[in-house]
Image (tube, rainbow, N blue to C red; front, side, top):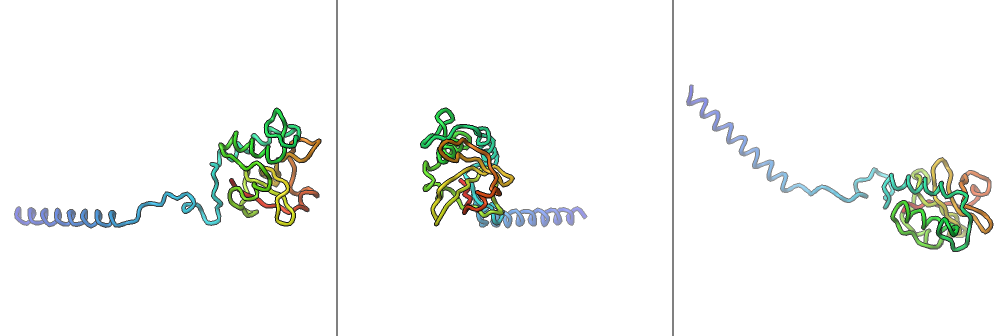
Amino acid sequence: MAAFKMKSAVVLSLKWAAMAVVLALVACSSAPPIHDPVARMPLGEVPSRLTLEQAHDVTIYAISLVGTPYRHGGNTPEAGFDCSGLIGHVYKTRGAVAMPRTVARLQDAGQSVPLDSVRSGDLVLFGQRGEATHAGIYVGDNRFVHAPSTGGEVRLESLSSKYWAAQHVAFRRP
């Protein structure tokens, strides 16, 4: 009986050893884990250089600048803002992302975002004949912050308003 138990223990040990070798070989032959953030996103998700927290910070800071005077070429709260100056200041200050300084160059910044995937912190671009003419920062609930024109000030407006709803709009995610 003792010889039978010893033989069973040896067979069991050999089975465990064989299993360990097989597992080690399988582990060595498997592909490494994917670390590409785009590859790990849910289908339809648009990549971003901003974390969700940074995107929310961008949104809150943009809203806090409502009322700042418009100034052509302006890019600070003290000097005032034009639309691309507002965007550049907000993204650099709250998202640590350098944005292009002109609306024409903003239309190629980041990734295009379909309407059903827009989130706060995305760019809103308005255009005519394929050229961007104005830009703002989407803040959620179909609203955006922008620096509209000479004599104006930074505003929070609805994309549904009569004027903006008639414009061609595109969204981009830095």
